[in-house]
Length: 204
Image (cartoon, rainbow, N blue to C red; front, side):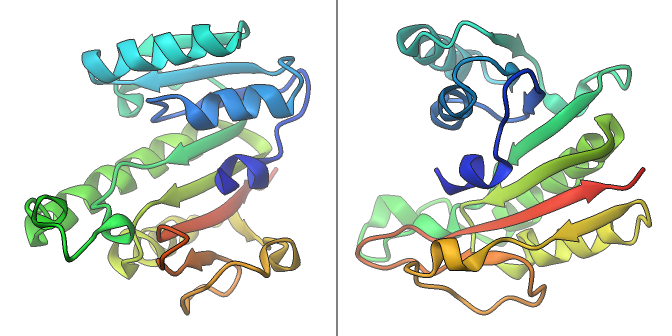
């Protein structure tokens, strides 16, 4: 839930959730804004979309617009104040090495495929983020390939800057070292799953 907290949704902001299912972060952002932000939530998988729709309706988040679409294909005429990209990933931060099913599909090909999709989503997000707008990029992976490596390519775009996350607010969390110091990578343990978070801003 930390990515939605860091995005800090405000009332009347126009928000995009690029990979929204099953809807936990979408409804959280709605709640943080007192159900007064206008949120567009995307999901490309029909089954996951139905789960997203169910959860949005159940939570009463009535200012959420749902789109059954791959966010990479959104038209560039869209424009958002803030974007949450909790990207599809390898799930390396959630693996249980003692559970055969947990690691069955984890391999180099999955990492490579995830990294490609993540970067494409990042590029789209930057295109449709308003100047001076903010976004959060997060994954449930602890791998540099899916996190810092993707960000470094995006940061080559001179109109994007990384924002500092208030680590004091999350000082209780177990952390892994990162190669971009303004980012946060949570170490998986018996209490937490591993995940990565970065906050970006589009310059005017």
